[in-house]
Amino acid sequence: MSARVLDGNVVANQIREEIRPRVEAYRARHGRPPGLGIVLVGDDPASHVYVRNKVKSGMDVGFAVDLHQMPASSSLDEVLAVVDRLNRSETHDGILVQSPLPPALGDEAERVVFDAIDPAKDVDGFSPVNVGRLVQKRAVLMACTPAGIVELLDRSGIAIAGQRAVIIGRSDIVGKPMAMMLLHRDATVTLCHSKTRDLAGVAASADILVAAIGRAGFVTTDFVKPGATVVDVGMNRVDDPAVAARLFSPGSAKLEQFARKGSVLVGDVHPSVAEVAGALTPVPGGVGPLTIALLMKNTLRAAEARAGRP
Ligand code: NAP
Image (cartoon, rainbow, N blue to C red; front, side, top):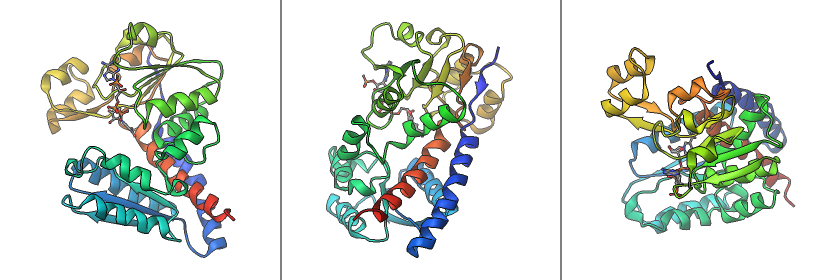
């Protein structure tokens, strides 16, 4: 048996198509499109790729996207000054500061900068106000990756209520908000981490297993109940031939890709899980496109909510 593939690109396209007419309606009503301000500090190549995709996606749905690129030598005060300007701007409905910030800004920089973003414009859903609202089940702006996963499950006809959900990884941006969102949808949720005992045994009790760890191919078949839905959040670049050989069978397309390019992008779930799971998200093309689609949805929501504000 091979698992049903849960195609994130298809669902992300559906979401974008639903956003477009609402953007048009917003523009007709307010005389301007929803505005998204993106702040990119430094030269991290992956961040530049992510930001390019976000700018492209935003423009594609009709937003006014405003990219503030700042050198790695920028001070924390300079970054905060840009955030402050965007907070005060009438035409910026969403603000996104790309993570990670350069290490030279200090360990606390991200927290300080994210805390400075007006919660009404916090389209990443990272601010303590929006996290608190999520816990109280009254969030408007929620973390994009887990919100995208809920959309994917819903639109793929996978029931959540009453199901046993296990999440591996307890980060603020994926694991914790994922737990809260699945709990609010009446799943019975277990949140696992590096100190969890009998991790494979706990994972194998799941009807829905979410892997957000950051370790290539970590979730093997013994973690998966036959027929379970497995959501692979991990995005890991593998450039070690020994690791690639452990993950992919000889002659497989991925191994050929590795031989051609010298690296390959893999999730946290081992490819052999496809033989056990009932449904599985691919990497790439699973959770990644949904994260960006939900960022667009959050920006529209932020614009609509701000417009409705007294
Ligand atoms: P993170 O902040 O590094 O958190 C990783 C989590 O995994 C931690 O809670 C950690 O446990 C847990 N973990 C690490 N080793 C483990 C082990 N051996 N057994 C059990 N748990 C273990 O990571 P993140 O930001 O959530 O990201 C996770 C992955 O998702 C990364 O590959 C990232 O690139 C990817 N990601 C993808 C998207 C997307 O749009 N597709 C979005 C966000 C993240 P402790 O808390 O105990 O240390």
